[in-house]
Length: 88
Image (cartoon, rainbow, N blue to C red; front, side, top):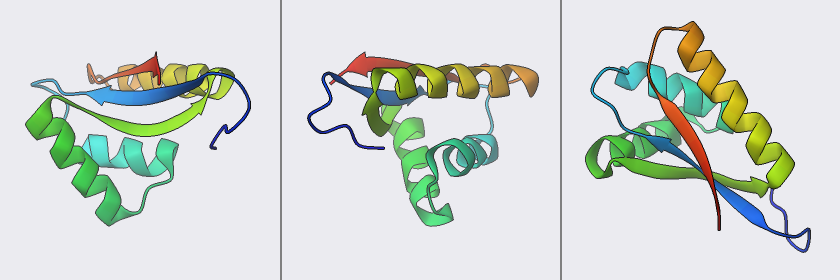
């Protein structure tokens, strides 16, 4: 959900770690960021190689909700994957 003209926009990033599987990161990108499998694989590789990648840009409320959903989902699945939001 793009937020043109609706105030600040927030970029959503996933951070690399040494324990979360690549398959789980792809799953998160597909479920929460509505990416295709190929797009999710490319973003996952960027996260793996660069340490993080932007997964989308949203209004503050949507960004906060997605951050919480992704971090809770990772925790429930026993992975330390972190999703953060920053003002773009």
